[in-house]
Image (cartoon, rainbow, N blue to C red; front, side, top):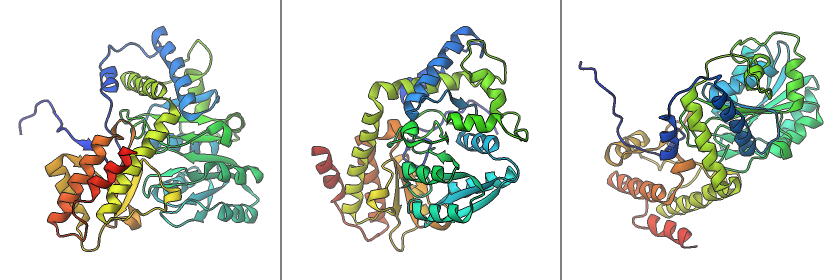
Amino acid sequence: MTIQSFHPPVRTLMGPGPSDINPRVLAAMSRPIIGHLDPAFVGMMDQMKGLLQYAFQTQNTLTLPVSAPGSAGMETCFVNLVEPGDTVVVCINGVFGMRMKENVERCGGTPVVVECEWGRPVDPQQLEDTLTAHPEARLVAFVHAETSTGACSDVKTLTQVAHAHDCLVIVDTVTGLGGCELRVDDWGVDAIYSGTQKCLSCTPGLAPVSFSEAAVARIKGRKHPVQSWFMDLNLVMGYWGPNAKRAYHHTAPINALYALHEALVLLREEGLENAWARHRHHHEALKAGLEAMGLNLLVDEAHRLPQLNAVKVPDGVDEARVRGLLLERYGLEIGAGLGPLAGKIWRIGLMGFGCNRKNVQLCLHALEAVLLEMNAPIERGHAMPAASRVYAG
């Protein structure tokens, strides 16, 4: 085998992530590297914190990007807030709630599960009933934007229920940040994590997190050491803390942080609420086209994520073959279902830079062509006009 430089094919990424990256973000990654304690880099870190606070809509001092993917952001929240013996109520309505439960167990905590239907939001009454039955609970964990189903849960209400029972909350918004409404301070969220490769349209490998003062107090008052040295926020605070003099903790992924800084600058230039509205607008066009084609979405309209569309596979259609043909012929990537939804849905992402009219039209055209070739029970020629009517206003 001849080894040579790798040149990836050009794709249009409309799966559950990563998403297409703005050329400005790619260009930022190629800028000259400097030291992670260089005064210029420290100045950029301070800007980064402010930009992340804007994206999360928070004034939390402990707001920073973990130097690892979104899964490490999840683990950072759990290893710092869960101690051995803690009871943690975990709401599961998809794959990523299941991962939360596993994190609790690995931290030595006792998970109490609120089991919800996949494709539905977490039910606040179920949470209320569970907390009433478990007054010993110290934490509640749930997913804001469930990537495996496209369902959006009511963060504000769930947080109010948890706080009424003296519990802190941990929230997963890996797919939510930058794509739909999220107000950390107004909604009272205690700990939250995300990823950079979804609606922020940045390179994978960084995990924005934010912790309230109550969460920081819990971390500082732990009885047991944090089980992970790398993710111990008592140590990380020395590098990302508010003081001008930064203590060395680890060598930060410098060029990836350049990219995140640029992605957040782009979000600030567009305006957060404008970004939310853009995701909603293109989702409405995609939805109109899919439904005109005769396809149905998994999640009820009131609880759908605009940036992650779970589409039911028509009877008799080989969903993996459809995805393969879309990639082979059109360079278009969409995602498969996970867990009990494997083989039953496609997951179509409209995230960040990839959330635009061109991608919506490509997806509808390509999907219709492939499904018609496979003799799927869909309507010919209705999808594009339906989407165009949405764009015409």
